[in-house]
Image 1 (cartoon, helix red, strand yellow):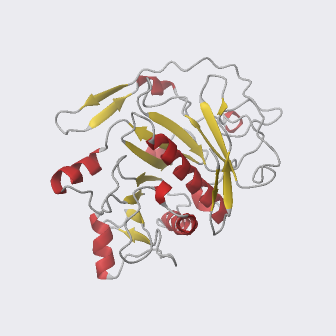
Image 2 (tube, rainbow, N blue to C red):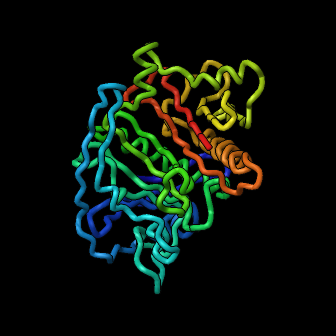
Length: 323
């Protein structure tokens, strides 16, 4: 783990070396504030909960009717469900409060292995991404600097997880709202290192020999409408409303012209990541204004990155956000 530098709202973010939680799971801090940003201080807190290693048994089954692989993880039925505020497992561990998944008394962005993963046995990996230590916030209320730090965390973990032998595709995503099935209100998302290629890229690859752009993206651009946001550099330059009004997408691209599409978030330059932070914040803020009288719109957002090893220009990275 190291530092990521670039221009824009956040000049650098530092990923700390992995620390081990008491049950052996890994945790990483991504800091954008001093004294950790410059390295003047190190993260030294330890997890004192004395947890036993997680006992997880999941299966990956093939649905012969659809051709989709499905992860079956019955142990997730025992995951933490809508805890009271003083038992929030994603909050920092503070004096006088119960210890949490994060040993530090404060943090910027944290990534750690999920205690209740969908995959197990060294096949695939599931990680949790905490966007902020503030339990009352949301991604849409983050500063540009903090949103950039989250993007740096996504990119860092995408690169690391893509190198695992079992990984076929890495997908960062966020489910928000009890209506979606979220069991923890604290602003967070997840990153899955899938041991199989998910249905959409497999379908497009099989039919066309390539992973096509989402249909609403090109159509909206040709029509000169549905562009919700544009960036100056052209990277991550369009948040496009699909034909279905509630469906939105962002394309992670290089500069205008013949430059290839970015295969994943790790392939973005520093300037492109900074611009993406601005565009993605704008997108989520628009989602929260979508329904009159609804302050926090439930949604499912996911970054569909190219399957591991696909480097052709057509294997682009896009985001879908469905309120």
